[in-house]
Length: 223
Length: 286
Image: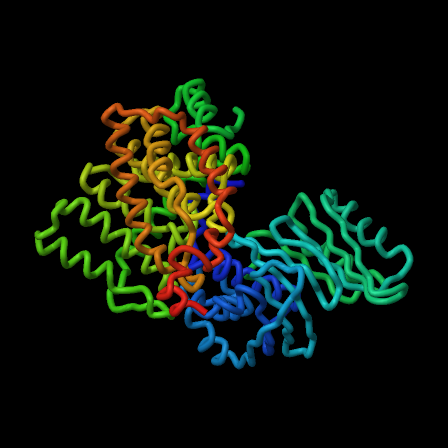
């Protein structure tokens, strides 16, 4: 914990969980999709659904989807800005069981027609946790440098991916692999101690069966 | 140098290093986060500048989405300028600043969470008017923010700064303790007086529940920033007068945690009990 978690962060009010955390959710979904979001369907759960309006939760998620940070003064106007950019977005509610009360499921598409579906929670202090990606259970916050690799389940691919990371002298602190069924879709989440350079993403993308690679480096959320 | 997890350790570390308390807080954080003191100072200076900018940008005509907040900072300003204020301009300005900041937060303006968004008004409400009154330069105010951050870190480590975990005492109470210690630094007090001021402030608000109407950070949050700010001022005054807390600061923090854990869940940011559960509170909620 840094003293700037206590005296800070600078953020747009009114709530670190319902506003700042909601912006960060949008940001992480944008990164997981890649490219400009042109369609978004957002389902709010629990407290997000009940008190989201007064907390600006919806505007905050849309702001994050456009790449704004939690301290961006344009957050209250995000709906207008999104419409100007031609983003199509809508909201609904969903009852998620066994999830934190501050949660949402977000389905987004980019101009290329790619789609991702992300489930995430905002437990407090502006921190978030992704609990589901494209129907596969997972768990990551983006607070540490994180690599998210989506691929087909092929024998030996885990070692090929981790081999690329090791070759760069990057230390892994957490590794989690989920898959649908044998030979089906697989999701690998790797948290690292050092910043993940672009060339790691390029090298992993070249591995057979890998479909999409996202890297989350703290402090580079808006890129 | 090592880090600290209690007020006592922070005071001991400060004494061993022979530096002022704010410097101990700064250097310990720089070591842990692997940043330079210059970069740290720049970040902290930005916190002060955002506080000033938010305060200056207050718009008395603005209302929150729910319509529950806005305009009270302006009402208080008018009353203070009219010269009719019972307690005089300094206290009046502290109250007005706390309201302005709390309302800015409710109206989705940019604020500095200190330690939380809902309690963002306490520190600036005390520091900005008192810096003017004491003629303290910005450097000294930034130092005071380090003092506040040090106190807040200990509270976050030993207890909590979350209303959902320990009630409003952990948000406004912690902010008040941070502000009281910071104010002692601003007035040139000693490290021990800072620790006492923090303990006195936290004691004064112990047991305060988190009961936001409709689950929103508005009622009673905006006006509790006033409570926290005024309590910080009186706690700092007592500490500077040489009055001590009979229960040491760390034990006060531990007691706050215990009280928070015993608090009914309806009184911990669920928007169910206390003011949120009143007939009027329920009408606004839902």
